[in-house]
Length: 236
Image 1 (cartoon, rainbow, N blue to C red):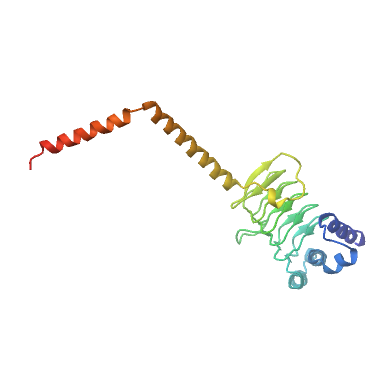
Image 2: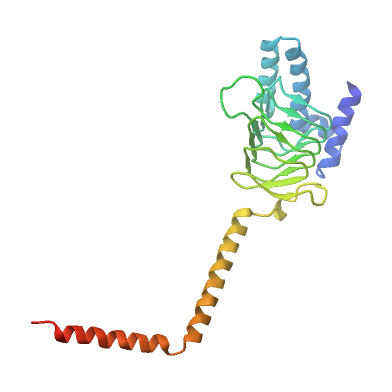
């Protein structure tokens, strides 16, 4: 138990450059407190002492602002940075070396029984405000961008951004820590593609007009004369 606790503290030092000392981490990091409380609650939950487990989890929620259902299964070296507003559902399974930021929801999509929450693979980063809802897997070494809404399975080694979440990088360079300011935006990319098509069409139209030369002007004059002739032959 104490070895796991030391590992939890060491994980914070590896992931948070603001951590300055063991005393500070142990007594001031809400994510660490929520994780330790969850382990106690999960112990009771596995022994079907559900009410005691829920009481512990709710006390932890009140103290830390992080709600982890006692039934959730969490792997090693798990770290919640800042943590306020994090919600982890009952049937959620989290692998090793997972990093969550504040406002993350790992939730379900309805009232169905059984497995209804996501399974998070190893070495996954889920950034602030992201919502991962449904019974599917987020593959190993993937990262979820800020405020993304993920509703479908994410392949390994992928980067997901947007609402709804879109995979914008897959099987590329190994996923490391999330760089919030360098995530691609698929919506912006789509508008850029549309603008490029509009510019190409304008260029083609201008080229067609230049090739026609004065044909358009002569055609307009002929049409004007034709209309004038029609007006002259019409009875008063």
